[in-house]
Length: 513
Image (tube, rainbow, N blue to C red; front, side, top):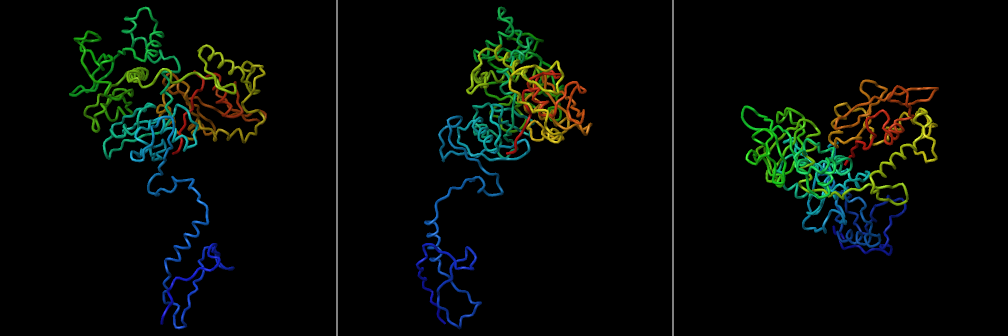
């Protein structure tokens, strides 16, 4: 028995091979090979590889080249997809294929995303990549947080910091990570009343040296000069021995952090050196009572850059309240000269093009006029303003079903979370005035709760539904001020304080990576 195994010749339609009628698509044409009657059906028939290669070449030349629009989906399923950012003018030097690094970033929902960046990629550049991928609203409040779970330490990266350099200082095989979330306190120092971050008692030594300047003028001069005021105050320092924590009077100067061995004396003979701020980073302690036995919940830590692992070498401090801790952290940031005072400016986007508002009083006047332009038929008469300005809030003709469910589409609504979880989320994204979220009430199944931060404390306001003449409304003051839905309630209090201690400024949100 002999078989003719020579490569068969392609017919005239080999340029465009197409199966015969009744043949399923994708079925290769039958081989034109003469077979003997003695050949059984179970006997394998070798097919020359050259024919398959020739057909693939013809198909490749006849079809146009289509780029893959989703390259990140072609990565192995066992690993998180890697985002590769294109070179841009902001936050990234020229890309070099020989020095690419993979940075893993986690979301607040424990989702993970691997980002491929160059060695000089900044934190701002990585945030822009993640915002673009998550289809989120881009603003300056997004940031990366360096988190060390085993040490219970975290700090927000400055926009100019290199994520590759920060990651290189971590211990190999540890649980350190980057967390992508909003940080509204990052630029709060340069937005509203910076003198409120530095209480007069904590800069009294500077006021004594500059008797002609007021407290507010002194802080403004420091910000314009790019320097920082000398901070002083009582801190509890973690030591060794029987008395674990000791209350000491500390000073933050350009040369470092000191504490006085004799009360509140500023005499150089009584000052004891504690830490070098220039070669260290300052972190917030998240679980101070559990891990370090702190007497309060307002702890921070100075961690030397050369320290990779372990608790040895950490200088842990405990403040008396949140305002004191915020003051110390703000002074450390100014000392590092990480942010320029020209980073943010007030803008007016009411016209077709943006305009810089240089006069603070003009910015306040514009905000008041915008608040007075608000008008709703469900509001009491003393809150209504007759004006010809455009109304952007929902009309009262919305259906009750839409009013009862429209809040589910808003980023500030967090569903059924506990009181403790809402306080944790607001604390993680910065204890700034006006930071808020709305959640379902756990005690009242039909009610909602507005959780608002004011003076570095989280307060909770109950929102109850009501009905009048078959129309649904929501109120926080027993029906005196009524709103058709939660969206209208939130938008009103973004322009007017109402019964709240401050207007709503930032909503607490998170995105899935």
